[in-house]
Image (cartoon, rainbow, N blue to C red; front, top):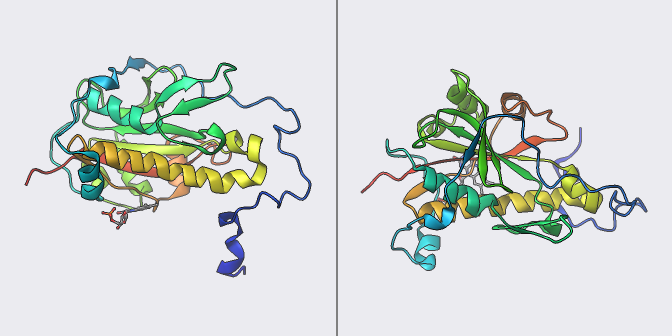
Length: 250
Ligand SMILES: Cc1cc2nc3c(=O)[nH]c(=O)nc-3n(C[C@H](O)[C@H](O)[C@H](O)COP(=O)(O)O)c2cc1C
């Protein structure tokens, strides 16, 4: 059996460890698509996130007050609030002139942006319950499916973390590793996991500004959540989750 210390290498910078191998970008292979194409589901236009009215807190207060919130009020969140949370975590500000990079509200090594945002929606005003996917280039939500038991399935996939049951919406981020590997070969793996932290930190910060709370979840069952979202678990798989809800007023 491998010792735990032998499994640490992927955490280290390994730009010299390709043993002479070239990345697919260096081999002049075409770049993978900037976004995952729609699956043909019903599309919902999201309101302009600029319309959001945040609370009175300044940035310092927001950062100091941020904490993981695992209890939510019974309130729903509005479509504008959801739009704002999606934009602040993955929104595209512009695409470069060659259509090769997106520049978003979070940084990403080499502007690879390897993530896809799925939402398990229970209580968002004006949106039916179910599972959706965010399209960051057009700022739209695509309806994927509804399944009677979907909330229990997401909860089971988080190893029974019960606060998932009550939240209005759970963000589920998958990764498409080839978007990073195409450019950085095996070094992309560390970079992409670092990137995931940026998404979730922005979710914490932007939630705090609208009296919502969230809690990062990395303790989950890989197979259950990938099967739930119908991901193949190899070219795309879940890396992180975060339920969001309104804070309980003191
Ligand atoms: C990468 C990561 C994974 C986490 N996974 C879980 C989780 O699965 N379940 C949970 O309840 N909290 C999880 N948390 C939240 C941490 O427990 C929390 O951030 C920590 O206790 C510090 O508390 P604070 O966020 O309120 O400062 C996770 C946090 C991070 C950053």
